[in-house]
Image (tube, rainbow, N blue to C red):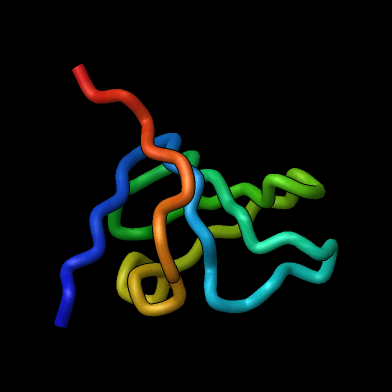
Length: 66
């Protein structure tokens, strides 16, 4: 199984669309749980890391690392 790469402040695409019509989410907190914020309506959701990795499709915008 492919190990998905993501980090804080990345914008990711999820498999299912949010009710507001977008499936782009920004990662705003990482740990055992990951908090993501909808880019369309700014709603935030806290989900377990394992569930997030399963539901994430791809990274849309990558943040710059130093």
